[in-house]
Length: 225
Length: 210
Image (cartoon, each protein chain N blue to C red):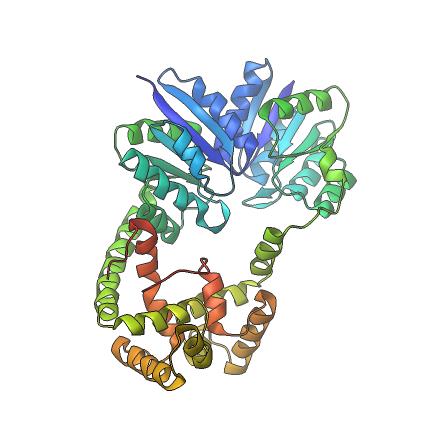
């Protein structure tokens, strides 16, 4: 049975030209080729596909949101991100969002065909020159997340609420107090305790510690701590 | 017609070559760098060269200039996602025969290339209606995009939670210089604190950690 491919790219010319070329392959059928700049839930919901080819260079990491919705739907990771670069940090983000492959746009089209067939069989494809670096980053990140998770788990629910205010950009203790209906003194105490428990010296550092937890929040529909 | 394609997106180049050849045209070379594009035009003297603006080793406009010099009979058509009016008028000044946006259907691109080969010009009419009306999204992207590389670096470090002293020492600049960058970031993003800047930079405005 033919591999059903869905294409989403910022550039309509590219999405449709690629579709025309893929249609020439006997074992590939294109079920959709659309111009998209933002992750459209309808797109992935309305099309039944085996492999999705998505523009990894969409602004604001939109491609990774496509990955998250698409892999949630088909149960396994079947998204290929195309990009003009292959920075390991970006590949790591894509992999964490559920991408199965990362292909540079300056590669021959023949390579993309190869990857599409591989991903349809359940394979994973990363640029070989970056694979080592990507794996190291993923392992380091996991260690750091575990440690951060442990620190954040030591916070009380109230302290977490205060930290949420900080993360959303509310830094002044008067504003936090008002928002949470607490006294300014209480907020000050919470802030001091947060810093002490997390072992940091500024609100900014405390917020930085929570960044990975948000990412996992967005991916798994629930906090890991 | 005989064509040379030059776009850093090789997959796009090869896909368009497939479509053009299916229409009976001959694509002599699919190149991804300005230097390769110029060399291919000089070597093969095609009827038309389809050229991207952002190439890894230089601007497409420079490449167009080089091509006009080495073989003025080759018609040049720019295919770009950029719609900068300055680029369009500069392209016209250099003497390109067309300027197309990458939101066209491939068939329109082919039609435009055929028109150019027949001696006509092909400028996307939308590119001639300037300036473009700006939307709120544009403004947001612009404010982040208006940061200089140094400021972007400072913002990234802010998101990571670095202190002024830490950033200054790692970037090897004076604390006062660093504060200057911070001030300028605040002004460009329209915020008043590092926390707000970090909240904007890390994307989602209302995430919860609780």
